[in-house]
Image (cartoon, rainbow, N blue to C red; front, side, top):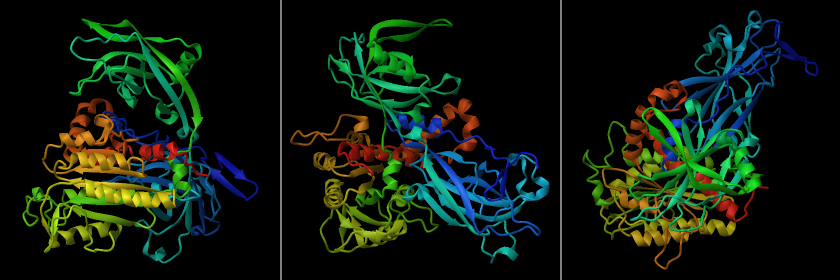
Length: 601
């Protein structure tokens, strides 16, 4: 029988019980580098999927089926890619496969999985699983789901109905194909976190006309020695004691404790061209030794003379004042406990968008069905967040418009109701949006304060009654906010609530002033009375910025990353806009929960 193993308790056997495919180690580093350069560090947890089935169809005349499960990922462009196969279980209608499939859970994207079950005929039992030609096997059924649907279940198990699919013959379409049970387990490395506090002595970067504002960037080393940023510290503003706040490194991000890391010290410049002061290369093991010994490591500065590269050793030393390893509750632990992300949206109806009846308007509804910028933003963000909101009833507002025979409103219910603001599902938002375009007159100015205040009110009401909801407000706008200080005041107040705010800029406006609301691109927000935001709750992205810059970035590194293209879920502006916008949400969620010591049981 070849490479077979048997289970004496059930009379079942397996063929090719080792993994036929390498596991997917993580997200694409090119996208991650683009995001990291903007301070975005997405949540990437390693998930191990295990599989079993019940009531499979019998396609053999003299014995039970010999099922094999094949796993596919469907990209955003609809392309389906095979990523793994299990072993073959002999003579079973109710198989439990031994082979697991490991993949990275990416919060920022919808990861659509397709599972197909085949009956492997006896003549092929001695063939390696990865060499089997599926068109020579009997198709038993298929099932589809998003990975988000599995990890949000309290049991992290999802039961799917197997359906005939496109590969089945018409004669079997009416038969029951059985059920597939998919279970997800988060790998322990995704929960192992190292807290490190760095300090620098004898800082050498002194300038006559500017102060020293240093910060650290920590990068992992990938193939060919390319550094990929995974973490950065805050900027220390003109403080002689150069001790940064804690940075947290996930073992899954790093790879292992022995993986080399590059720690670079930069001097901050407001023009974005930060000066490299020096760097060190150490693993987590090395950093732990530095902490234990109390000794520092000299920074070095790479120099070149002709074709020779040398390192200039600096007086500046990097110390590790704190090094703590711990197992922490992960984002997925909270989801399994029943915590939810409640999606809300606010749409800009100011006159600068242009007449909605004209094709050059940002609000123009294309008769061909092609979505405008506002519709795209709602669809692409909403399709990700809807899986984390069980009732899928979404508050939806508009601002900057004049309802029929009424004054300009800076926060009106998109559905036209004066009593409630919720709509049913993402399509409900789309229908309410198109209806509003027919029933309001575009006006102005662009005020964020009222919609942020309304969102904060819902978050505070929920906080008083339940810890199991976290709110996410999506604001889509075509212009710079007019009530900047009022917006800052509302954001500082909201920073104590279970609330994050995502701002998408659409159109050709200059959004530079908007970046001040995103603490990743500047100082922590301060209110008019001097109060500083307790945490960063804002992510801002101009839609065109992500679309154009990411494309240029891919071209510039194509020589190194071309072999990864087949593993990308989608290489295009829209998917990257979602990644850039949503990347920090899990971190903001965890920061809120941990600072209030809210833990899943």
